[in-house]
Image (cartoon, rainbow, N blue to C red):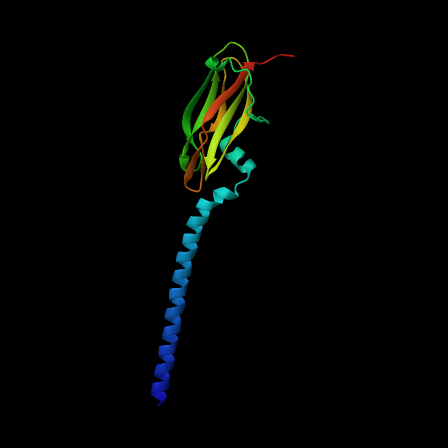
Length: 163
């Protein structure tokens, strides 16, 4: 009888240890899946300021602009080029704005986006000296293993008035 009781205790301890071990492994797998899922969903948690800082790490100025028509005759003097990789995992390309005229130009550049169905734009104002080049940010919001494109469009351009 004593041997039977010892056997049952040993069996019970073995079952408990096996059960705990399986629960721990399942918990680790669940946490890993949650991390992967939450990374993709975390883009929804970014604030507007977070997005601006990640995409427009540049010399521009945030402005309020709602699509109204503005003078835009100088686009032939403004060139947007892409260059070095940027963003998380280098998912985008650094963008540069070059003024090929002999006068300073003030311009507004719109960065359009579609982040998980949220579609809009962010306008930025730049003052660029003659024959100068400014960095205007990254071509994509790179976050959570995904890249969200921010194509740029010059929506206004005029010679900078001097005081």
